[in-house]
Length: 276
Image 1 (spheres, rainbow, N blue to C red):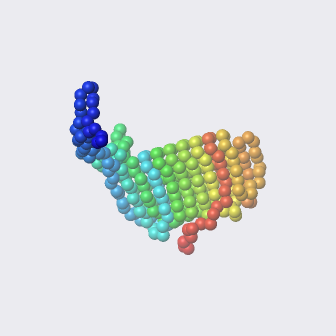
Image 2 (cartoon, rainbow, N blue to C red; image 1 turned 60 degrees about the horizontal axis):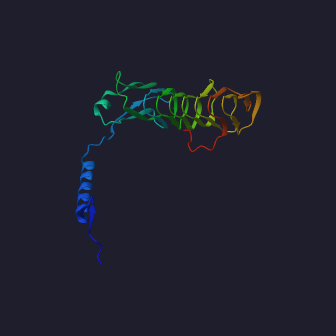
Image 3 (cartoon, helix red, strand yellow; image 1 turned 120 degrees about the vertical axis):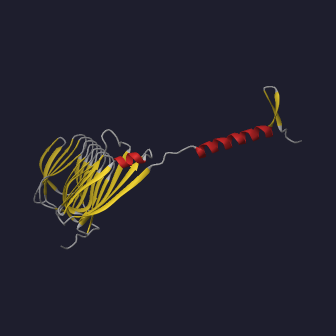
């Protein structure tokens, strides 16, 4: 016996093939609507320029929404690439956000200019190349990370909502953020001014070679301090610790409120500092 191709709905006979056809047409209509409906795609615009900067010169950059990546190279010039992205696909917003550069042989300053009361949907990601030997006097953003790689430098790096990272480099750096981690991996610790590594909600990791010398001061209010390197304790009370690394040297201050502080042994570097 063949299965019945009809059924009863509310007392009426309904042919199954009719139901299938109606369902199929409805599905096609929904798919057509989805296919034809306008979609909002992110729009981008790229700014890219090269400026002369002598070895040992000064570089600064300020951003608002977006990360900043800085890499060292063997040229006496700065390459600035800024990728502007509008999340709502509005090209007008992208055009309203401008990149302003003040360039001199010994100093290059990059500024991100947002219009008053607008441009909030536009993010700017920077990818920058600088001479190996450079002064990163002030590199900062508000919403995004700051990362530096392959330089012999001193610098001050800042974010508010994002991580701050220095890898495969040498020199002395200060790093600040509010919501994010701080990690410095230095192949060589230079002498110089005090270093300050501080965050509120995040951890601090400092990697140094085993021949580094410094006066260490650590304060982890709601976390622990741990060192893989031998540190001679000079003062310890609660979450506060001071000690001497090697034969002592410049001050390194590390602070966090909600997170841990770790002093770690640096790994062999993959970058070789160029011979002057």
